[in-house]
Amino acid sequence: MELKELRAKSADELKAHLVELHKESFSLRMQKATGQLAKTHEARRVRREIARVNTLLGQQK
Image (cartoon, rainbow, N blue to C red; front, side, top):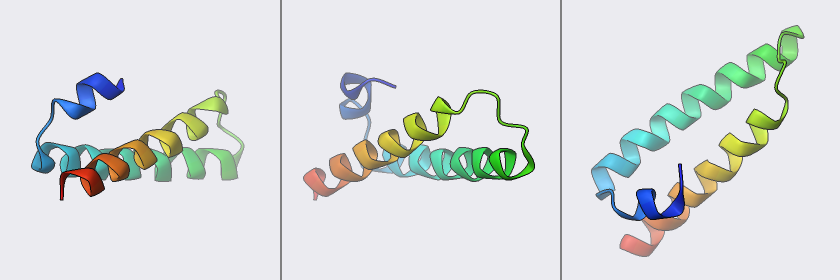
């Protein structure tokens, strides 16, 4: 998701999105551990998006 889209969301929506990202991150880690992860770049994308959401939540406070 792009930064413009994230900035348009409220704090509650960002927190919900953050929960989804953490679930996705966990799923990708499990796939990597079992050798089933085909798109290795997805883990990096999710990690960066989690950081973006956390930054926006910090700025909104």
